[in-house]
Structures are given as C-alpha cells and as structure tokens.
Length: 198
Image (cartoon, rainbow, N blue to C red):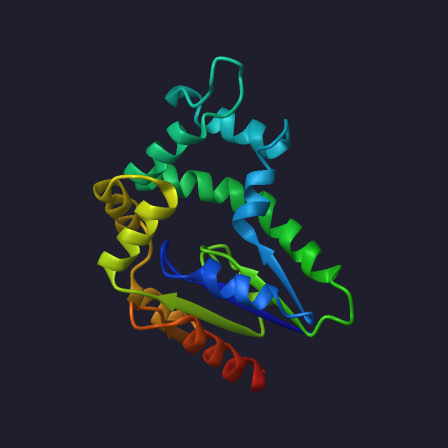
C-alpha cells in the first residue's frame, strides 16, 4: 500500500484530483478538512480547547455552538490566530488521520491523503509520495469565489495568508500545474503516470 499526500493552496485543485482518484476501486481517499470539521460537530476535547483559546474573541453563537464564520474571519486576518488554531487542530487531527491510514484494508493499493496543511502538520512523514497542486492566483480566486460564494477580495485575503507556491516546490515530490488549459483528461493522464511509478 502506498500513501500519497496531495496538498496545495485553496483553489489549486486538490479536491478535483482527489475525487478522480476516489473513483478507483484500489484507492481510499482521506480528506483532512472533512475530518477536521467532524471534530467540531459535537462537544469534543478539541472543541473545548478551541473555545478556551479564543474565548476573548467571542466565537460562539447564542446557543453555545461554534460560530465557524467568525472563527474563519479571525484566522484569515490574523496569522497568530491561524497558528494558534492550527496547533490545536494538528494535535487532535494528526493521530486520527494516522489511525485512519492504519485501518485501511489490505486490498487497497493506494491511500490518498487530501490535506491542505500536509507539510505544516508533519503528515508528509507518513507519505510515500507528496503531490502539490498549483494554479495561477487569479484562477484560484475565481474558483474560491465560485465554491464558497464569497467576494474576490475575501478570497484573495485567504490566499495571502497561505503558503506560497515556492514552499510547495521546495517540499513536494511532484508538482502538478492545474491552470485553465488543464482538462480533466490531462489530469487523468498525469495521475496515471504518477501511480505507474509508485
């Protein structure tokens, strides 16, 4: 079994390539974002730590649940808040992801770890291969706006607090350019070429 990490900044195409890979019968996809959201779906130790860490910033709704929009606004405008949240998230999320990898059935040939903060969380140490998706800034902004129904300036602010392309070039084993000329067929061909050599 080969563990392949897929990362890249928001709007670069991680989800697109992960969804393609998920259609393979010999492949299991683990989505780090989805697992992180589950950590806040009920009263967990993780959620308690987040509430305590940000108690002065009023991140709760009237019913006591987490105001995701307010928390997102905080972390996208303050790098210290982002780092504080990431530290709590990594401490709880990484062990769950590792456990998930370990429980994948033997008949699966590939495990795809879709993780925006793959390197920051240290998850790359569990991967046999790492792939970084990249796309032009203006295209990423358009994709984010369409996906999240937000204004371009908000999408741009989110991207500016994320790692630069050079970070992924330095860290990843493979870089896949996913610009406006990259069709689904081209991505499929790139996937096949990569998996052939793993």
